[in-house]
Amino acid sequence: MAPFIATTSAPVNIACIKYWGKRDTKLILPTNSSLSVTLDQDHLRSTTTSRADPSFKEDRLWLNGVEENIKSGGRMATCISEMKRMRKELVEDVDASAPKLSTFSVHIASYNNFPTAAGLASSASGFAALTASLAALYALPSPPTTLSLIARQGSGSACRSLLGGFVAWNAGELASGLDSNAVQVAPESHWPDIHALICVVSDTKKGTSSTSGMQRTVETSALLQHRIKHCVPQRMADISAAILARDFDRFAEITMADSNQFHAVCLDTAPPIFYMNDVSRAIIAVIEEYNRVALLPENGGKRKAAYTYDAGPNAVIYAPAANIKEIISLIIHYFPQQDAFKDPFGLFGTAGVGS
Ligand code: ADP
Ligand code: DP6
Ligand code: CO
Image (tube, helix red, strand yellow):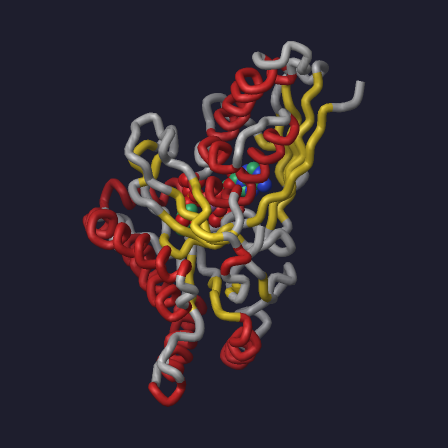
């Protein structure tokens, strides 16, 4: 009998409108919708191999070569059992000759080609690759938007990494979470000119995980409630329109405003959470000055770059391809020291946004 095995990769996505807050921590239902750009597979990605075998005694997981405990009732266990349920319902119950893989245990090995838990969205690519790999192993007929419902239960941001290009995660309204899925706003081919420059300020594990940080924000921040009700809905509509119109100036304005508001909400948390450091803030100053000059009428009057920061100090700079060389020279000019601006993983390059 041929082995039942499948390997799949998934890229990271970096949000322009940030997800920060859960209304249901078990199902991972967010307090607000979010929107991101999925980077292409050539750069930051997770690669996951899943194998099912009747001889396996229990589900096991190795992350970057080290075995991790699969906590019963935890996120990893939920994703695996949901995928087994789909295998049974969509394949085995429909075709009596299909091998009963849903009754076998699985062994899963995953590798990230970039720092794990450093604010570069490893949970997003990690749980997307896990879901995609089990979907391939189980030969599920489900489209990415359906699979996003499962990846979401591993890590919220993971639901967006199952689709390429510009992706929205609808907060949804149902208590079941069945309408809290990821949908493509536009494919990468709609706007291939946008590039992402990843500036690794620090590759160390962050002090406060996204999961615990956002929970603390939900419990203590009044500013979060203002953000959810009065800011995010309009921004979601405006940035989707900017993407469809390929309006970089507007895209950049909204992306930077939302990153800054997300970090303001972290500061409004008790005790406060600081994800950015001095180098992160200095990069903001450089890009703000670059845009100030670009916004002068004699220079065209439009922004040329957008910074955004997730739950960590590392900058992602979105810009049209034509500006990337200039931005790299600027960054190297202002951050010449090896320590302040290092590139141990070869990440200091540009990434297209395809999937
Ligand atoms: P990040 O900013 O990197 O997303 P998080 O705190 O959100 O950091 O999540 C990090 C956690 O995501 C890890 O501790 C691990 O549990 C999980 N994770 C990361 N990579 C993978 C992977 N390839 N497969 C499965 N889980 C992963
Ligand atoms: C700042 O998806 O890592 O990157 O759902 O608890 O696993 P969990 O959190 P996670 O949070 C990501 C937060 C963010 C913003 C974003 O990606 O939208
Ligand atoms: Co994460």
